[in-house]
Image 1 (tube, rainbow, N blue to C red):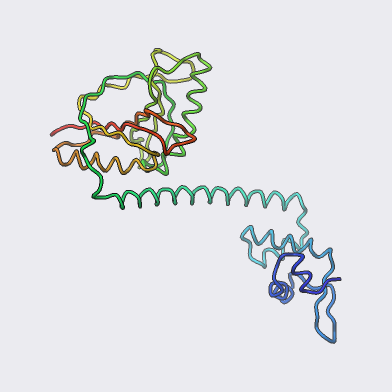
Image 2: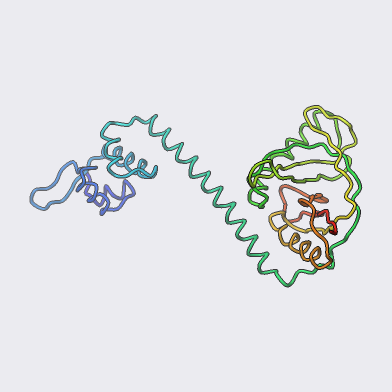
Length: 272
């Protein structure tokens, strides 16, 4: 048998934790020296300890853990519970990572306030363009909501175009429109084509824009809010009003190196 210290090291827990588990009846020692009070454990008790720790990691209370282990949860059930918890933690981590990226992008935008110039904004006409596109719904127009939605659309779009033997004739273009309800946004992931029809892909003609405030954004689209702020200042300074969401024309983009991207933002404007 093992002393409580040795058993704690083998189980990768603290002695204090083992004493607590003993006091609440969750994991009793195999033997207690009646003269010294020293606790001793058997190797096969590690099996119960491992289940206790695993169930705690699922977020269960110690009382819930005691009930479950006393009812002898088998390995298959425990593995399933742990896999479910792993999926939940992965989803939480992904959501937290996206929120962190959004906070960092917002911080960069705040730090650059007052340093960005509107001199790079160009007012111009945009010719009509034909695009093949796929669409999906995003919960909002914020970068952290748009990115995970639009990201998978483009690989699938290019796969379908390749299967149909269609070669793009120009850059990829993303554009957006409000969904019928709430703050949701319909995301359009498109690419310029010459074909009138494409199997399994919608083809549409984007209308010309008589007047668009445009700016070329360098870097990842997570930081595009900085360039949008420049556009907003230019529009306000020059007596225009924005008309809808901006189109994003991906002049140079690589999914593996988004920080090296070059994107023209085109925002339709009008005067009252």
